[in-house]
Length: 89
Image 1 (cartoon, rainbow, N blue to C red):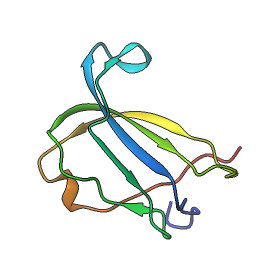
Image 2: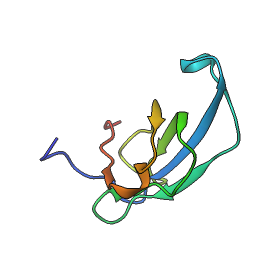
Image 3: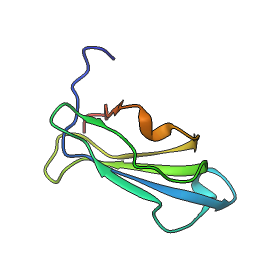
Image 4: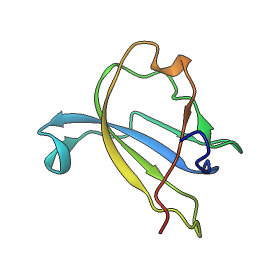
């Protein structure tokens, strides 16, 4: 991953899982949204810990496709930068 291209301008949104799991999870309203910087890096804003579905959508016209993942947010998740690496269409 160290040499993988970083995706700038990708929109990351975290939705709390209300019930269920995976593709059949019932989701709440967006709890946090941010956009990757020029280096494909982002930091999540502060939001409550728990189970989330996180969507990662590249900018319009990108050669990359979007994804969603399930994740557990912990206190302090906002203190560390993350990078976005997406699949190529």
